Length: 113
Image 1: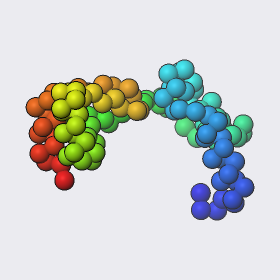
Image 2 (image 1 turned 180 degrees about the horizontal axis):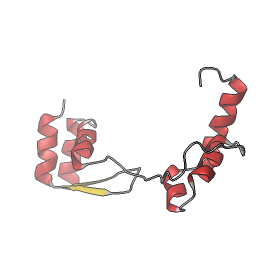
Image 3 (image 1 turned 135 degrees about the horizontal axis):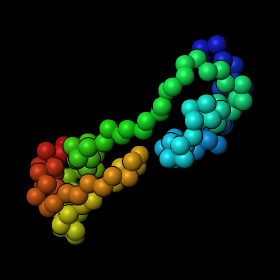
Image 4 (image 1 turned 180 degrees about the vertical axis):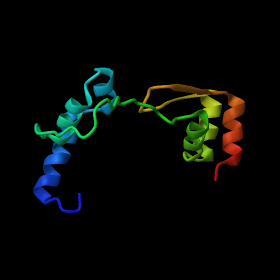
């Protein structure tokens, strides 16, 4: 939006906040036009192409979650291993759960910086 004014940008930001999670709108099976109206806050949406079906796909994986665990550091991982002996992570986008065994956590800890 290089030509947008501060007022227009503010309006879109407020509309995005008010619209809520995209995944919820897709779960509600809203049509693309209604999603666009909610996100932009503009009732005058022009349809450029018909027959587009939005699909929510998350690219999370156990490997990504392991990389995330590695960022908490060796001491925190060691503490989790000692206290819990395992860990569970949940993707904040799709809510998929990933479980890590003690051995997996040790491997992550050994590769963490």
